[in-house]
Picture 1 (tube, helix red, strand yellow):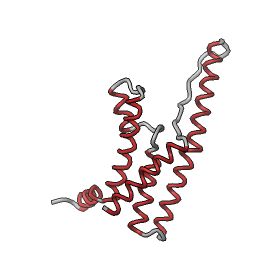
Picture 2: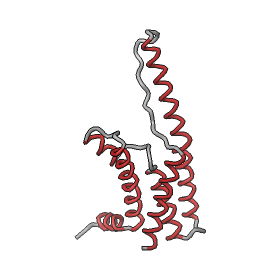
Picture 3: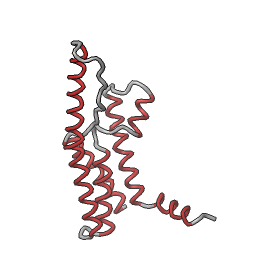
Picture 4: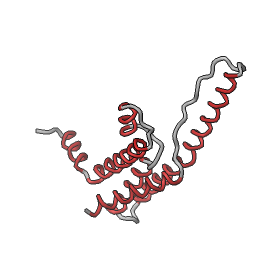
Length: 160
């Protein structure tokens, strides 16, 4: 006999919303991995699995896909005039703004700072430069494609 927590977990794992979100994320990561694989940017099995399950950035945006899917499914299930849909919509818009704006700008700045650090180190003007992490944001097209993917998956899981 399952405990109450076990029943709730089982219910969550069967939820169309949960399944739609997982499918949306996995689809975006899978497409991203296939694109990188065919463009010759994956060199090891480790790279393949990291990209498939963990890495961010690139085409399409999995963040955009997930939040578009959540927003779409909430709209279909709770109504597009519901408070929870408005919350999901704002969450989607903040995520998109962050992906295209803040994270992308931070990544570009970190890349340029690392180039300057390398140049200073080469010229002997700086002894030891510790590189900054270059966070991958998204281009507007990567976000747009991720959003479309999430929208279509959200519609599919809502009406099928």
